[in-house]
Image 1 (cartoon, rainbow, N blue to C red):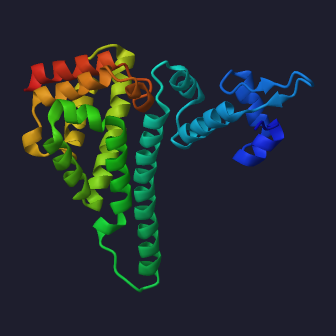
Image 2 (tube, rainbow, N blue to C red):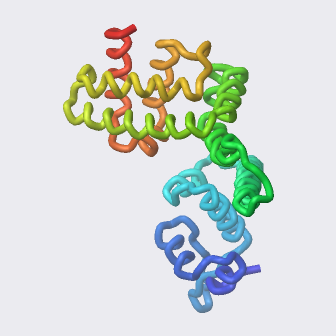
Image 3 (spheres, rainbow, N blue to C red):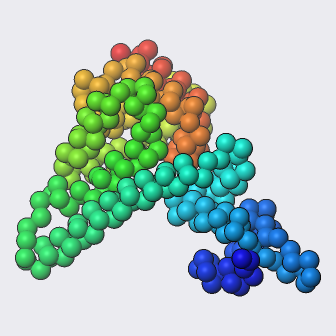
Length: 253
């Protein structure tokens, strides 16, 4: 069975303009009816659109989707299983946030009393789920399952004050790293203070026995080999960060 562009738009819930754009960039190219040259989307195109929409729900860029779907190693069943796991994690996260909102409203109405820990439970679970999604496999391979469990437990146990401290530290060390990189000097005062604050930030999430100068340097080395670093640490060179951390420990440790 074939669908016109309007029929597929109605079926999928996206606009004809979006479908035309996908055609324009080569992401979803319909066949052409030889009798009238209209766009016709067959079963193959419908399945491909389903994959595209799954990836978009997970905030994958169109460029990355193009690369994934054009890969000769693309395995549709495996990808669907990955989608399912990701959506189940997202469902769990949303359920936690909904629970938190309901509890917050009930607390405002005097029906219950929320502890500080409960107020931030949803946000902490989101961080745990995000870490698992982005880095779980890699961290398990390098540091083992026990390290992940300890880190997750430490995040869950953070108080409101500790959570806010960690967020403030993150903002501060990122600003200092950017200032240090402008000087092109990984041993400047701004770089040293940024590394000290990054260490302090890490200790909000790592247990003391997990921390060591080597582990800190190893983490920053992992940043440098990961393209996700640039998305998170926008404007900061991974190699500059690594050199700054190494010099920090040569000076202070």
